[in-house]
Image (cartoon, rainbow over all chains, first blue to last red; front, side):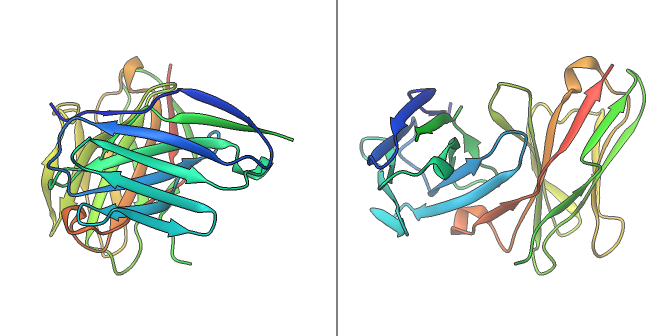
Length: 111
Length: 116
């Protein structure tokens, strides 16, 4: 069964620090992985998409990596800001027409 | 920037009633989806739709659910006879092409459905 896991469920970090969010998946036959941001009661905003042939993708202060062999992806956030507080979700595509989501990590940046 | 829009943003309905959730996907997108998120749980896939037919569905998407693209712009999810456990946030999404080809999927803001 294709599953996606995110640990920890919650993370608090002082403002200005760099941080890493983790995502793991059970099937190495992954096609691509997306990271999303979700604010309370809101929709999902796509942050980064990594193809299976790529090792990493960058957008501003965000950098996402993908390691198929170990079944892991990370989202690195540099110089965190209070506005980064949200739930971060990773979702994997295994070549079908759906995304399989993790449970998310609720990130709080402490001013 | 183009966006996926959903209506209503919140609906309260009595158990057993029919509900229709509406979505306007991004205009040049060809693939449409519905996902749901029960409070405190994972976002779950319901159904994908392409070329006027369902291309994939989950076991959640039983006979109580149906989808339709009644015209060139709207995409709807109908729940025939709602149950308490259907209470969730329902997200519509669209993509330009197949997800397996590495296309980004864009989500709407969601429709909160509360069944009482």
